Image 1 (cartoon, helix red, strand yellow):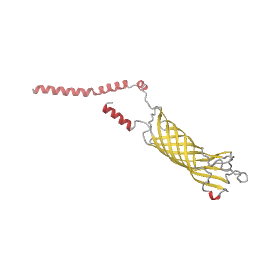
Image 2 (cartoon, one colour):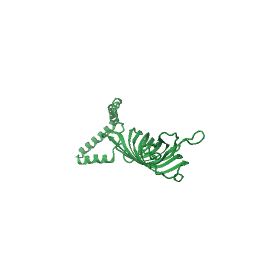
Image 3 (cartoon, helix red, strand yellow):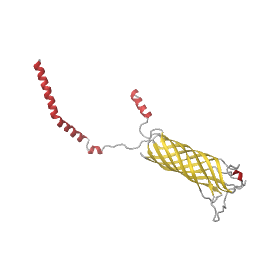
Image 4 (cartoon, one colour):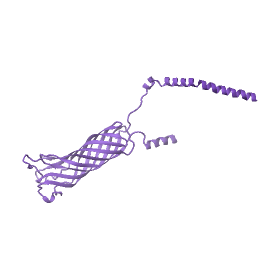
Length: 279
């Protein structure tokens, strides 16, 4: 019995030594086989999908802008423009897929505070031939709620933007400069001026994306359909109109509330549920 066990032990020791001696050749054969399998020609046939697949994600943002304000007068009046010192507000943006597969569209709603109005040019003698009841410059402070559709084309870190929609606004403050016909109303509304405003809003620009932060730069246009004053305030038969027209350069910082790309938590939970329950 002891003799048989001794023979088995010596056989095992010899097998271990033989394996140790053959190890380098075995590794070489494995490396050669691996290199032959994953060759350069094989790698050339591998297609890696690097396309950006957007989710239906949403953002909240803060925006600030400056610009120039004018009015569209009918009958026309010669005028200059005045600086919009501040135009700021918050926005909520929701992106979705058009027809379920085109991720280029979204809706944006916001709340903004801004300034607009109009100013007339003096003549060569420094006098104003054109005024509105003696006022050579009028400034309005307003709040507005815009609702626009946003078209966007995205890459991994860049996007092109185009907005178009409507807004509703309210003028809550006024200031006039010049020899206004009613001195007591230099900073108050007359009974022939409108406070409510509405109109079109459009924008074009670009965005830099460093998820979850996006920086948007846009040139905005506001064209009001609500005149600054009643068209027949001076003459029942001779109508006058004045509509706001503003150009604003704005910068917005937006925070992504959900994943821009990749699988969301809800998608992962859905996959896990299907695996567990076999659906």
